[in-house]
Image (cartoon, rainbow, N blue to C red):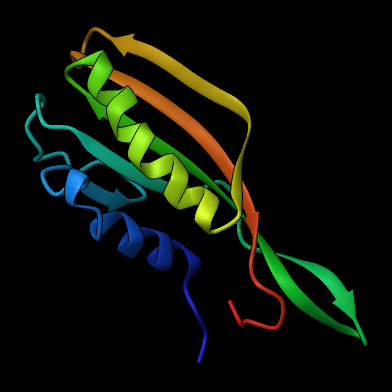
Amino acid sequence: MVNDMLGDIYQAFLKQPELANICIKSFERPETLEADKSSIVIKPVSSPMRVMNGSDTSLAKRFTYQINVECAERIECKEIWSVIEPILESFHFYQVAGDLEDYISHIKRYVDVRTYRGVSPLYKKY
């Protein structure tokens, strides 16, 4: 059986009571979601990469995800990040360069986009 890192992170976000009213999706924000509703989108930046080789086999994989938080209020983006950052750290994912914090006037939402990278546990198939 193969594990799913994106699915594992997604499920961890869903378990947080503070995120109960936030739309959490992978790859893209639903077009049908109202503009004033907050969302979290988990998007792979690249395919999983084999790392930590030993005995002619890969022992782990590296994952890079872009996490997009979009809200009508700027401070809500910060509040959401205060909940999801510790979750990502619990998976041993850490922030890398390539972030964006902006207000996009034509969609009337604040965006706080951050990129996180992490490595799967040794010997766990992803």
